[in-house]
Amino acid sequence: MVSEMMMKALMLAAALIGAAPAAAQTETNSVEVKIVDLDLASAEDVAKLDRRLGIAVRRVCGVPSERSLAAHEAVTACRIEAAARLAPQRDIAIAEARRADRRRLALAPRR
Image (cartoon, rainbow, N blue to C red; front, top):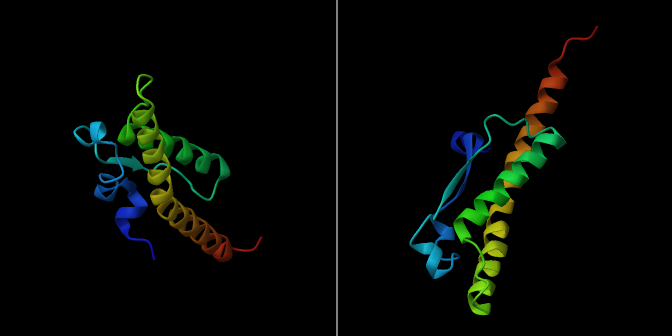
């Protein structure tokens, strides 16, 4: 079962600090992505979640440098790793929402 904290927010946690490029490590190392206002049983709200997660990944990893290929590659690698680390949390939150939605439907009175 998903913890109460996960149902309120997904976290880009301290584990991502190691994934962030050195320049980003001195700035924002984690970002809370609120999901309490989303119905993750809805495809529309899952799309909103994905947009929020994309924004959070960019905030944690920073903006790619146009001046340095190595810095650009580091930011790109960070974004890929951050998205991969978030994927299980995202999938669990969606699965839990869909399970809860099915339970509500199963308990709905017949008309």
